Length: 316
Figure 1 (cartoon, rainbow, N blue to C red):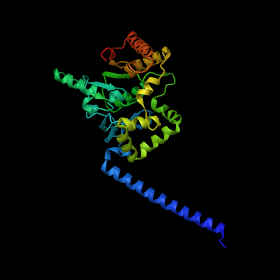
Figure 2 (figure 1 turned 30 degrees about the vertical axis):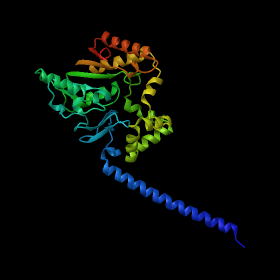
Figure 3 (figure 1 turned 135 degrees about the horizontal axis):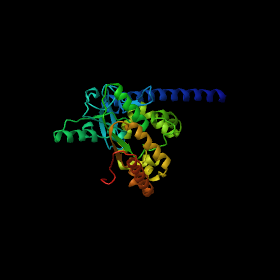
Figure 4 (figure 1 turned 90 degrees about the horizontal axis):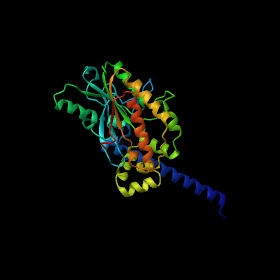
């Protein structure tokens, strides 16, 4: 007579053994695939993806003397970003700046996300100076953040020997306008933003920071319309246009005045240009009229305060 409990127990042990072997083999294959991916496609190594280091003063810099990759999963761009000894994306040494030179500070637009260094507006402006025989150069001290971050970046650059008499401040109307009454930089607020992420976003962030295979797969799949739409539908990719359309803008003069006041602190005592980079939501989404009011009101507040404003909205 067969002992059924012993037979079931034996089958269970065999199943457990098979699952253990399968898990070990799968793990080895994944590790091997990860190693091969990093070897064949070094630009997808998570260790060289564009990232910033938070400094003791609660502002961020790039890793000194390192080259990282700025890659859009949807295939829009794939460029190398080189940081100098100070953590800025600039081939020039800020200590060499003269009284005639300019400095550009701002977020991702001013840093030049998605474009080669020589294609940024600061570099193109320097080329214009040279084309007409001018001696002025344009140094970049741009790192993503808010107006308080920009103040700290400027202080840091000057502490390293920069002579900043002329300043261009790139104001991104998408995300630079906020209530600054708390006196915190974006990098100080980052921990609470991370804590409010969805579980799906946290998993995606972890994979991006640790897996070259994930970055490679994202780049390959999201660069094709069909797979990209499927990934957006199940929440593994972001539909940036849809996010812009869904965004609900509010005209809050307290926020606008707070932003203006921080700009005044930033440029105090300097020859400065406030470069207004329009929000994409002026042309995308259901709140174009409110976005236009926000834009017009902020520009006028800055001009009324005596700031020298270059507004790019009419050009676009």
